[in-house]
Image (cartoon, rainbow, N blue to C red; front, top):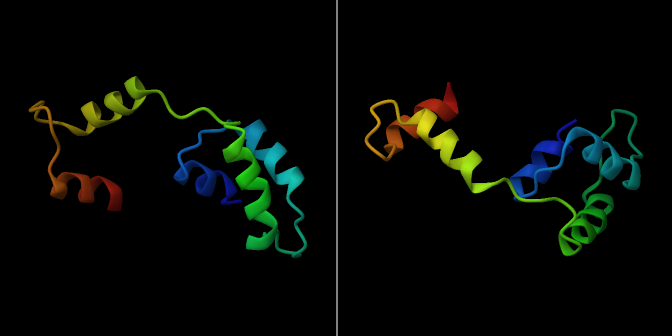
Length: 87
């Protein structure tokens, strides 16, 4: 269930259907749905090399940071970022 988060942490932003396609290519052997790293790596490496998933657009990232910049000063402090990431 965490594959989408893992893929997104690698800078790829697939939609949910694309995550399901990726999962279909990975051999899931564990009863709990766990994926072994050695099964995940070749499939993910192929996706990265083919640039299968588009990166998130810069304007979306900028909008996210603007939403965190409550004082509208053009930046966010470490403390504000930590607060939002941990709450």
